[in-house]
Image (cartoon, rainbow, N blue to C red; front, top):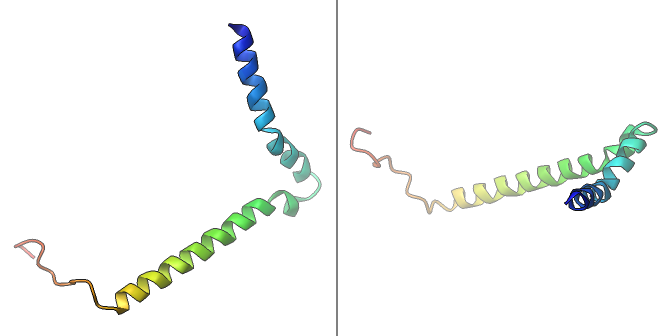
Length: 74
């Protein structure tokens, strides 16, 4: 049974090799170590801008019923 847990530990150590490399790289160059983070930030920003433009396009079509009649007290 202990071999199973050693196998699981070895598997996760293998999966975390890129993070060990990033940790070592961070000591020499902060910019290179955070390159992936900057790329993900740019992708998120581009997706946000795209989503806002799509919302504006649908809002400009005036297809939605924007009347306030969902509740009687309104």
